Image (cartoon, rainbow, N blue to C red; front, side, top):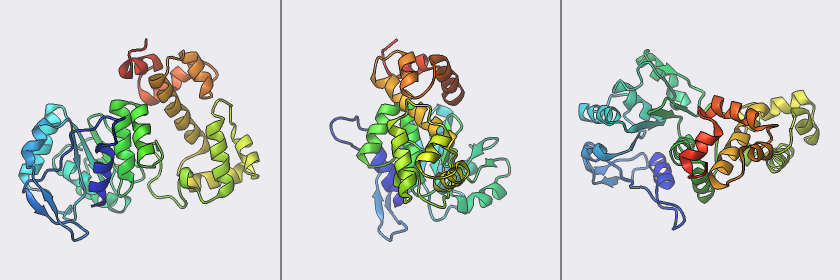
Amino acid sequence: MLAVGIVAEVFGRHGETLPGFDFALCTDRPGPVPTDLGVPLTITHGLDRLATADLVIALPWTGFRTPPAPPVLDALSAAHERGSLVAAHCVGAFALAAAGLLDGRRATTHWRFAELLARRHPEVTVEPDALYIDEGRIITGAGAAAGFDLCLHLLRREHGAAMANAVARDVVLPSHRDGGQAQYLAAPVPEDCDDERLADVLAWARENLHEALPVAELARRAVMSKRSFARRFTAATGTTPHAWLRSLRLSSAEELLETTDLPVEEIAHRVGYGSAAVLREQFVRRRGVPPRSYRRTFTNTP
């Protein structure tokens, strides 16, 4: 039920200011479907609903240790062959693996079941620590609340940072967590950090993204040594200060490219890069396209 709620929340209605999606739940046997909460869901759509879907997300189910019925596997394969994006949340990855869609690809799932997925499907490269893995038209995500990260990533990828950020604000979530961030953290992620000093420093960094922000300066503001700061930061976030800042800078650049007509040089300085050339290098490496091409994808601005 958590997975259903997450997907419905992200792809559901968000008022008049954001476009809604044609969202539906479907099953191979329409009617009452039992859930882990003991409250059944009445699902009216059958697998034929997948025939027109641009995005198909396989949700977790309690019987994932047994492969889905052949009609389900056929429907998933047909959606992929037709050109749809096919994603899986949590142990939904087992359905994609059973359909052969993960063969020769990297994938993730809930960390608790990653070893089982790898053992049953040795042709799949399972990465148990990732929040989500994007392999083009096949995307897999970790378990539980990481479904939000998967869905927001899909929104960001297909409809831009501005929409993903707006939806994240609407559901009161961090706008972006990098897919390589660890699933299991010893402490909360920065937006919900219990360490007041660390949380204050991260908030300050967001407000001063135009600065260089060396780790030594962040550590000084946290009243810690560089080594202690780096260790506590990684324990709280599952990533390094450098990786966190890079992700934040690129996400901010994406939104500025979509929502303003600022020159790329100005955007580079606003998000903390010394020149447009440096921003372009990072953008191509991490996003696969240069900033101007990204802008043309989501706006009519040259």
